[in-house]
Structures are given as structure tokens and as C-alpha cells.
Length: 269
Image (tube, rainbow, N blue to C red):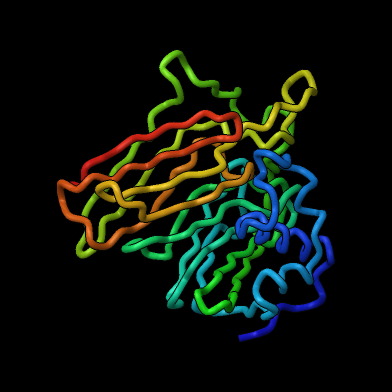
């Protein structure tokens, strides 16, 4: 293992630190504080304090997957997973986005510490996976992704998807048993506007994004996650669950920064 290098710019390290602070409850949620400047307010020493004073170390047991080259930064597939024991939280961060946080996951009973979804990257960037362990240690992995077309240009996304007369669009969930695990895939229909994109007239489209998403297995919470505005529009969330059987019910629920919410279920097949 290698200690976190000191050569990256303070801005990069401050973005990582603030992304962590947001998810550990030491910083207001993005829905209240706004998506652009809050993550620049903290400095790297606060990251160490939040981790109990231990330096994060680079670990080969932490996996971060993504393309070497992303043609369109509006939807970049990312995966995070680990063989480390005692995982309390997994975070995805991008150092060149206006705010570092992409998403954070708190796996519960039976959920493997292995997740995938799509993110927005405004430009070529170092992307980080960060694992917080129950014993207070922290490990990271990183990957450089070259972005051909960034996510924040005018017209870079489809028109804003407002809830219809029946409320937000349903979450399309598939829960399929494969061996000793159930693989859950959920298409979460949401605009996921960052507040940084301009419309055709040059005006900023207001921020509109999911803040919290959770999953239950037969009514018991097995996953709690916090998302920032840099999760892609209409993302597909994937995770795996042990201990579920055909006929069991998997429910996903979300709440966004405007107070909208949605909850849908699927039966394990």
C-alpha cells in the first residue's frame, strides 16, 4: 500500500475532503447548500480529522472501474467494489467536477460492497473510489478518465423531466437470483440536473437531483445511499444481495432536493 501522495493540487485534495465530509454528516447536504461552491470550502487536513487522523492508503483490494476514454461526459459508467472486510461506506469522487461528490453507499446486511451507476464528468479527470472501514481506516483507488465531450455544455442533456400528473416516473427494478446472490438493477428516471448546465437561451437550468436513495428486502433496510448532482440523468443502479430468495420483495425509494419522492418494488425471480 502507498500513502496518499502530496503532489496533487490543494484544490483536488480539498474536493475529495469535502466530498467525504458531506457524506459523514459534517457538511450540509447538497440539496440545502447548493451544488457548486460548498466542496471547495474545506481543506485536506479536515479529511484526516474525519478519518480519525489516519492517512488514506491506496489499496489493490479496492476496485474502481470505468472507461479510459469517455466520448460523452454526460453519462460515464463507473463501478466501485472491494474485497476489504468491515466496509462502512464507499464513495465515488471526481476531482475536476465543480463539486467532488458523485455518490456514497452504505451497504447493510447481505449487500455486497459492489455498486455501479453512471456519472457526469465535466472534463477529463481523476476519479477516486474511497472506502471507509469500521476500524477507522480509509483506502482509495483512482483512475484517469479522458472526456471528449464534457457534461455541462449548453444542450448537453435532454430537456428537464418534470414529474407528471401521477408524480415521478416509476423506478424500473429487476431482481434476479444468480447462484447464491440476487442481482438488483434499477433504472431510476430522474433529470439529475446539476445546476451548472445552460439551456438554449444561455440560462442555467436549476439544480434538480436525487439526494437519498435506499433499498429494503422484505421491509428491512439493506442499502442507504446519498447522491450528488453529478450522478447521470436516468441512471441504472446495480448491486448484489445475499440471503434473498425467489418471491422476496425488493423495494427502492428516493427523495430529491425539491421534496419529490418515489418508491417501487419488484419480486425476486
